[in-house]
Length: 467
Ligand SMILES: NC(=O)C1=CN([C@@H]2O[C@H](COP(=O)(O)OP(=O)(O)OC[C@H]3O[C@@H](n4cnc5c(N)ncnc54)[C@H](O)[C@@H]3O)[C@@H](O)[C@H]2O)[C@@H](O)CC1
Ligand SMILES: [K+]
Image (cartoon, rainbow, N blue to C red; front, side, top):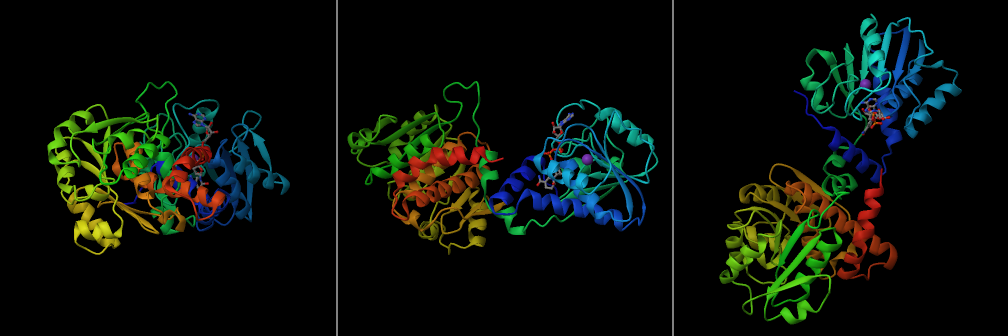
């Protein structure tokens, strides 16, 4: 059975590749060469007709055309090519004198090999324009039909289709698409081509992971972008305040900060943007759990523990009463009963789980505790026991106090709008480090946790603008 990747995760991976320096143009080149290799291993001459759509699926076939030496190749376009990368490859073919025509003014007389590069993973909804007619023509002809990535008309994720190319061979890239496995005979023989994405890239968090987790609704009402309750403090005051501010700047609509009454006056005076609640007592205790659980009802997630010492028992009890938590610092505990993201650094990991902070131990601890763990370090390790990723953003300036509190707040904001803790955790680690990298660009190593918080909106904007 093929391992699969759906179109959202493929797009995320492709954005990450670009971020790590492996350009889409390189991936397209490898994809196109891969198609040609499969054809060359089966045929050595003949007439090839390429039917190309307007996106990158067509672009892959334009590359393939350059490698089909000894064949008569002609290209038929379904419409104006919109993808810049595909246009670039098409103009090379024009320059090289290959015949290019437009569907509508083209008389299809069949071919020995037909390359179906009309629609790939970008196909959505019902077929529009000339596609249905072209697909019927392809299916009526006798040539050997090669579909690029997926048979055009087939939904790459669900495998559903009304009208789709009946392929003899489908050449797909990096991994099979889930729809191919559900398409049965429609896809013909399925060959997965390596397009040169290093294995590590699949495990590294990048902008694609952030885009999977972050969302803004156009017609939003207050609260839709997340309601976060931050509970912490005493003896330390600044830590929970940093988490709360970070949650706001990471996009949460509503952030409530709850602290023991002993530090309430100071915590409350930090920022007019925060709603601050006072909890009875000098320090958080299990006696506060009912009140915290009651406050939590109006929030999507509780971020707990920053600025506290040895409050694992309080975290445990809260976790019996709420659905989602992010737990840091003094709140960390191995027995948490709700869905949670734990954010220890190496020392905290050793203290809480009694083991060295290594990748296998993080995976094991996540699995046994049923939580998602972000082990903070030069390379963050993120695992929910089943999936594991790394994050390399961030720099030596982030060793300054408070950046851990910032991460916890960001994780709260992103976990508030994502059901999947792992998706939220990978995105949080990435954007926290990326904001730190923007600080470094501007100020060198001597920046503070507040600087990182200030940079968060810019970091989010820059990443969301990446295409
Ligand atoms: N994501 C990646 O990492 C890679 C993608 N590659 C190729 O890129 C393809 C995806 O490219 P794109 O995202 O440009 O998408 P496609 O090329 O699959 O299709 C997008 C085009 O089709 C049009 N379209 C979408 N739905 C339609 C409908 N119902 N009726 C009519 N037209 C419709 C869109 O307006 C757009 O112009 C993949 O299938 C693969 O072939 C490869 O180059 C290798 C790397
Ligand atoms: K296709």
